[in-house]
Length: 348
Ligand SMILES: Cc1cc2nc3c(=O)[nH]c(=O)nc-3n(C[C@H](O)[C@H](O)[C@H](O)COP(=O)(O)O)c2cc1C
Image (cartoon, rainbow, N blue to C red; front, side, top):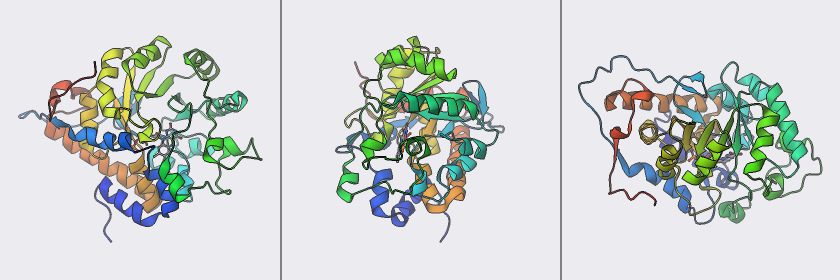
């Protein structure tokens, strides 16, 4: 069989490869999956406006995130339980993508690449403090605080197919400190339902790291994020896995980008499947975009090699798209490079 040539090929092969009782966890969303579908659909409602006769003989995808140089404005979104897809799991992804995750061995696997630690504030604050301390010692340079999970979304595919976290799956951050761990998903992820804006200060003080606030969908919260000193606002509906019926990441992006202006960086995820999707995100105000399931699919299909390849494919698409758009760097992509395919009705 030939190698997959695009993200859709990886989706197709992953669905054929992975046990359906496991795949439901990765593929599915919450409720009726309206927000899950909205993520991908949002990209088809914008079209590109390329400019001609621009010298694009030298294109660079390089940019900076929180001041750190990165090779392209596309990263790997944090997603859990990667060892269900590949024995090397997070280590394979980290090696392939230098992605951030939560443990010293993963930090080591990603070498000199910038690493961000994704954090949930759990009910047990001591565990969260330990996690922050561990992250700081392991040299993470920013903290991605995911704030859209005060309660766990209801993932109905998991319920229908009986998805269970295997007992032998390493979940060091959660399990090591709780040997008598209870059985269900919700008990594994008892994020604090009581977290508020006031708590951001202790997280920032404990970590002494720049905070990326992940899961913001409104201009109101974007403004509060800036007021509370966030270094970046990460627009996301958690891959359609939390509150069903919310906006797609791309649809929430313009209002957030407009609200924060240049006071902090803005990122987006949800439904990105092509390099041209990244271009649309840049045009609507994101400094960078992130992919979750495309990486999960590639990991399931071909481990570390798959993740390398899917990122290379997206990178190539992004580079080609940038040149054909008439731009030589991500910074040149502006609002004038996109237009809605249907009359756009911005939220009031
Ligand atoms: C299987 C799975 C597990 C996830 N786990 C986490 C997580 O632990 N923390 C988090 O902040 N986001 C998590 N997410 C959300 C992703 O970071 C990201 O927002 C989403 O996957 C982006 O959408 P995409 O999959 O369409 O690219 C998860 C997503 C999936 C699909």
